[in-house]
Image (cartoon, rainbow, N blue to C red):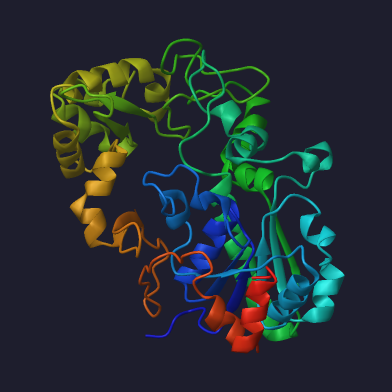
Length: 418
């Protein structure tokens, strides 16, 4: 089976998570992704958070499957000549260095265009906006500046970082989409272009409903949000000058909350959303059929105003059953719900493994490890997850492909260029 991006060569200068998550997506879609790393040490994530001595870390392994690795000293003059040759043979160049790093190496966008007019030059930066543009952005920094932290957590607690890597991997997904659009446009124009994604803006894009609510707040209370210090929504909703932290509220027109289940462990919860059409079967299921027609509870407006009482009532039932028993019974009643799954449950889930959401990959030095599969499912472009490369594993074959002979490679190694 052919791959969607077969024939597309990506020169991958990225490191850590944001850029590497982007290029891994491109590799999963069939692009030939060549990871360019400094000789000797490589991407810093090869040694960060190691769980086994003297092998590449899981941090690196889970962000660099399906790639080839070459080493190159870009601070040497000959290294820059080698890089120029690689650029001429590439379709896409991706980097996530700090502002100006690639320019200071001598490869400004105008110069890259001179080397290859069809090149798509893609970057991830922290921010493009005023004073924020000089900030050194990390995952939590992007969440802080993009609206995620101020709206995550509980009302009387501090701003909270989410577990999902919306700043790093979220930016990577955005950049992959932009690169694909640029490749498609190039098929019509014949020209490459500059592509940039700011982490702050990627997080803001994922927080757009909070900007929706900021504008609604100017016209009255947000009745779907938790009331002050109540733990859940009160009857008056939330007012103030900014969108509050929403706890576990759904933040939508239908109330939702995470409800405790048996036996009461830290992740023994199920998330339940109360839709209008599911209200009657829900209250019958939990043994409160008299509430089906109660005017204080039976309308969407009434339920939003009485969320605390509703979820206290529902939790009295869910707390007597396991989260999977609750899920099964609520699904039978057509009630939207889902168990809170721990990372242990996710990595051991047979259904997720069977569908390819979690896969096992053989590695030549660390053995088998588990990682996420490709969430982009294309009927005519399947994905086989392959091992991440060892440092410089593909030097000989990649440099031969761009015209370097065996004698050249011996000299380049001797001179510390590769």
